[in-house]
Amino acid sequence: MRRPLSLHARLLVAAGVVLTGFLGLTGAALDRGFRQSAEAAARDRLQAELYLLLGAADLDADLGLSVPEVLPDARLATPGSGLYAEVVDGEGEVVWRSWSALGLDVPFPAPPPPGHPELRETLSSDGAALLTLSLGVVWELAPGRDERYTFRVAESRATLEAEVARFRQSLWGWLAAAGLGLLAVQGLVLRWGLAPLRRVVHEVAAVEAGGQEGLGGDYPGELRPLTDRLNALLAHGRSQLERHRNALADLAHSLKTPLALLQGSLEGEAPAPELRASVRDQVERMATVVDYQLRRAAATGRAPLTASVALAPLVRRVVASVAKVHAARAISFQVEVPEDLRLAGDEGDLMEVVGNLLDNAAKWARGRVRVSARANPPDATQLTVEDDGPGIPAAELPRIATRGTRADPGTPGQGIGLAVVRDIVESAYGGQLELANRPGGGLEARVRLPSITRASGSCDPPRPGGRT
Image 1 (cartoon, one colour):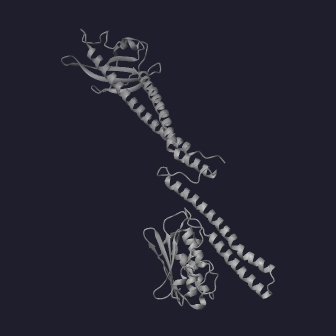
Image 2 (tube, rainbow, N blue to C red):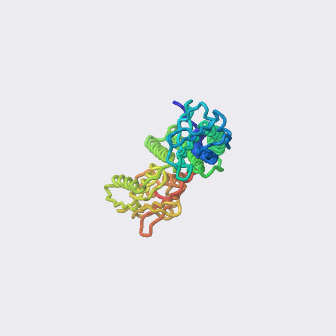
Image 3 (cartoon, helix red, strand yellow):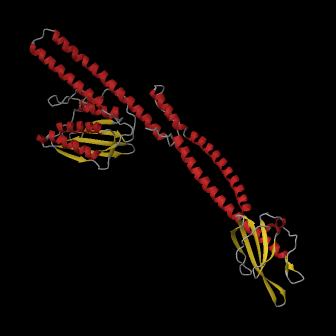
């Protein structure tokens, strides 16, 4: 495939096309204007020659029209000079003809009415283009005796075309020089204007090579959103990598103790029932650890450029799933989430948070669970899950969200739900999870998530608090 043109080349080509079109139209307009001006000047010259000839003419002794030998314009006396003149009478007979027309047949048009000058174009006998001007006059030879004459002058269009050619050569030469100069300036301007983009490319290459961790911040306003989001993506990638490393390290560390206990039990001489109980306890413990660390590492966090998620449909889907799990207890779920409320985050993370909170509330509820959400200006959204269960003793609240801790060992579960919620909310999204007993009975879990995009922090161990 052919490689596409660079931005600099595209802009330079576009500027060249626009500049060429603009200068071309400008040159055409100036050329047309000069030609019209030159033609008007040629008409004025012919008219002046006609009036000079008319002023030089007079009557002779025989009452005939006479034109002196020496005229004001010497070209009329020079053969082939390009300026010709003649006078004809009312019968069309030539009364006088200039020496410049010697040996040349100038086909002047028919005489115009007296007092009405007429400009025409014609060809001479040698094929030269001529511009002619004719004027009919009525000359009073004697009282009661008038004679009609037609004064004619012609000028070769070669003079006019030479003037236009000289102007055109000068015009297009200057326009070409101006176009090349402007194009060179435009190239320098484009190179200067696109320098930040080239620097982005160089800095991205430096990030790939490990020479720097992110892009610089001193970019123009048009590029700042791009560079900020690239930096956010890089920070998010580093954060995710750190989360996965921490999860693997925590998983390895957490499995050391149960594996050591299993090895000790197998090497000891404990009775079979005691050995089976020990193995079962350690296997359950390892399963809890693996499940927790996998769910913890799977949290995506709020990545830059992530599309927002409509919260109301998501909550309804999770409620429908939880209601099926606890269908035997006939729990009433109440959803109060605005339809236009959206959160910027991963849908899987949000379903994990809402699902764990609702499942935890349904386990303890007597008959009602309420989930609500609202925007909490200026930059947060609050999700609240309430139940009408017995609540949690105040002394148990600081430790209940620790992994593996349950308020009632008889309640099914592994004791990791709220620990995963806290880790996702606080570590991956920079939010906050609060648990509190309701005055009327039951537990209220409040999740505050920032509405603005932030780089997720490192994956720290879950903090105490809450119930699973």
